[in-house]
Amino acid sequence: MVALESFDLPAPPSALRVDIEQVSHGFQLQGAPLPVLDQVDLAIAPGEFVALLGPSGCGKSTLLRLLAGLDRPRAGRLLADGHPIGRPDPSRILVFQAPTLYPWRTVRQNVAIGLEARGLLPARKERIDEALDLVGLTAFGEALPHQLSGGMAQRAALARALVNDPALLLLDEPLGQLDSLTRITMQGELVRLWQRARFTAVMVTHDVEEALLMANRVVVFSERPARIKAILTVDRPYPRHRDDLVLQNLRREILDLMGFGEA
Image (cartoon, rainbow, N blue to C red; front, side, top):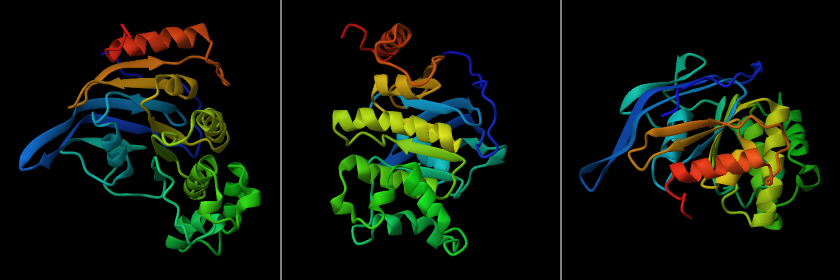
């Protein structure tokens, strides 16, 4: 296992530091224990973009739910800026693979949901326009979800998250349902959003190339119950290119770690 270290980035005032300390978790499946995470340790610097890679079902999405405060770990603790994570908070937003937009609400109304729920809509209504502009959907504020392409719907879901000014954005395979060309476009757009909005980002993906194109560090997990096998720093400038030899070498290293070296 690679020694843990925080990525050395200037700390944006709006971004959270995240500490995952000896976290273990599991579930009951048909009356039998199912261990999912096993003593996971990870420090994430404010403003860092971290990608989580590992076999399907190893516990990556479970870790995001713990960071969002939707579940509590069986052992260990998770901290946001030194404070224990015990429940959901608007500063920590989880974006799922499917956009999950309300079909009867316009894009603008979908984006406004978080502010409405917190009673902040009258005072912060301008944030809706800012969020729509940030994701390139200004002209589609009055459109209904069925009128959007897959990429546009995912951008609307991101705007719904960004309107709350998250300090930590948790992304659970946010591009997994998109076609390949839209996915490539959205990878670049997500990186630009992160650079502009200055939040800390943690993304689950099964795509090794995607992780290397987007993240500062890539965390590789073992089979369930997941332990950290390696943490790789991706010290390359943005925008990144698929034919970068450094990225290609890192890709081979990650595939070896995941047992696909021969393939």
